[in-house]
Amino acid sequence: MTSDAGPSDDARASRPALWDQTYSSKDESQRSWSQDVPAESLFFIDETHVPLDAAIIDVGGGASRLVDKLLARNFSDVTVLDISSKAIDEARRRVGDQRVRWVTADVTKWVPSRTYALWHDRAVFHFLVAREDQAAYVERATSSISLGGYLLLATFSHSGPATCSGLPVQRWSARELTDLFAGGFTLVESALRDHVTPWGAVQPFTWVLMQRRAA
Ligand SMILES: C[S@@+](CC[C@H](N)C(=O)[O-])C[C@H]1O[C@@H](n2cnc3c(N)ncnc32)[C@H](O)[C@@H]1O
Image (cartoon, rainbow, N blue to C red; front, top):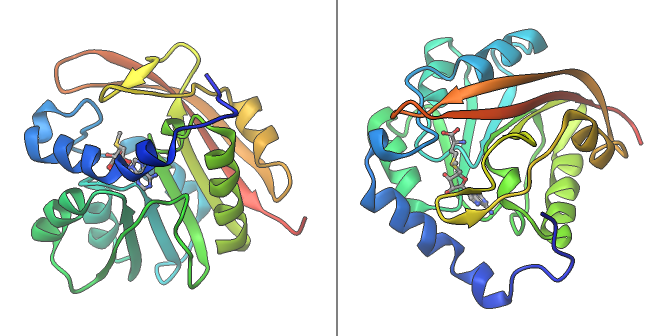
């Protein structure tokens, strides 16, 4: 679903509290998106061959263990951004402060202060169902990924769920995502991959790896 009108200002303002509530009330095993090993993310990150000092941002990273794995591989410039301070606190307690920049922000309002060689988003963009929010996201990804850098995006596919955590999502094909970001990115690779929730439900995802080029 896409909505031109989009959520009201009140609905937008309540997003952080809603996600804080989700992270406070459910432990890792009760969240549908949890993974012990973010295998697909690591597979595609390996495909990019970005160097160990590349600036990497996990947008909507929440309490994901991707950051642990990136640090274990000796990536030295990792940022995790999430709208929920509870999620950031959980990851920060686990990983520590020393080698990660932690940012609590709504990606549609965030003002990036630097550029990134790799932007990773698993299961975040699909919550943006209003065109206005999608446009804000595209603008931020385009302006903050360096030329030649990568955008790795995973959303529910058209055969995936229509909601997550009680929120509507927009489902995407690789073609639709490629078209949306066509102004600044070229598709490198795409794939359909199933995520299996901690309780065994199957959620089909669309993955796209795109590369930033001059418009
Ligand atoms: C389904 S979870 C996925 C978390 C993580 N990417 C993973 O794969 O484990 C969605 C995440 O997006 C975050 N989120 C939702 N809307 C956001 C927004 N507008 N800006 C930043 N983060 C957002 C939520 O707090 C949550 O951590």
